[in-house]
Image (cartoon, rainbow, N blue to C red; front, side, top):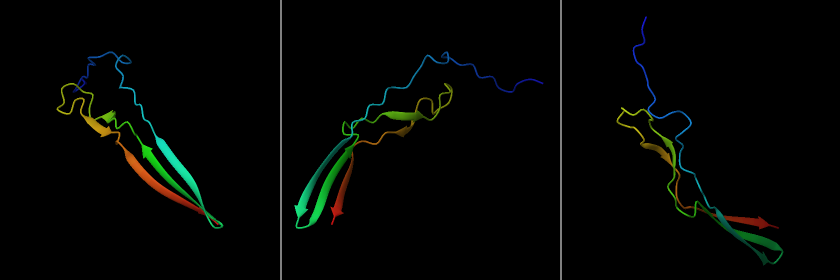
Length: 87
């Protein structure tokens, strides 16, 4: 019996790493008093620096057409509006 295919790594394991992922999240909130009711308005911005960092690759096999193509990328600048009521 013989192996039908042999994979030879071109880069030694543990020597090539992905880029570092830095993400800045910002949140602003303010309470307002309206009679006996308290209302809080809130604005959140996720990944405020808008970096499209690569999270994973399609293939790390050198001879494939999808070699080093990103399969998932961090979304940039996601906004969220929120309110809270306390009565």
